Length: 93
Length: 274
Image (cartoon, rainbow over all chains, first blue to last red):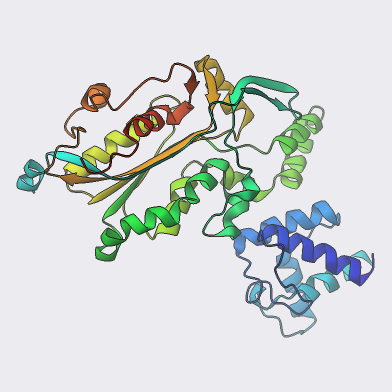
């Protein structure tokens, strides 16, 4: 799965979760700050990604992974769409 | 306090609304492909969930059809309630009669299928993987008035009634009690009967042989010195009598949990200030 396909799948999933097909989703969009996701949306998004991409995404794991990489992401508020793409690619590799 | 109760002799309907299908259209059957079963003789509201405009579209995936229908009235209700809400957001109560929201049919069917063998292992695994977390929220009847309350800015008492026949009468009676005791200054009584969950609708079907219709109704009640025809002193048992001729029985159509409220408002159409 290429980065572009992965990005489009995640973008569609986010749009479905927040019920807004026109939502402007960029790779560097913050999930909470820019896209307005709330705690229940993360569970929904995880479920949506698992259904579409077949990858079981644990956001807590994503944050821990980024902390270990000293990426500057301290908590879930700092997560971007690109962080998810990178995490899935790393785990799938 | 007692003096106030004594002066509150009657209720006034400040606002009322109902939404029902076109009753001249032929009744149909609801066929559920997941459970391979059908419910005959039904009539749906002529609106798809995706076309219902609600104040917070983001909450869409957490809302049952009943919640969507009632939330779509929020702006209209807010305009009527705003004088009360400007004084205090706690001065208005919501009294809501709805049945449980839908289970996630496809995932339920899949879970049942998977769990037939190693039940404890496969059931837990399938449940975790297949259940969309927002489906739980759709199921909860108390989320219907909660969403409405959020949209309206109401922080007063929120009451939910799920009795499949008397739910909307119970809602109406509690509103009367709270108004007569000055516990609230305005009461929003709402009910929606929607075809969300196949098994809940099937139960409603068995309760009554008339055309089973979706329907929603709501009214805002306040205390008044002027006789509205709605006596606020009687018990639930006397409710139909106390509403005098305002209730009527539709011989052809049945609106499930909302039936009394829908028919009350159908019969009162156009009468607000009595």
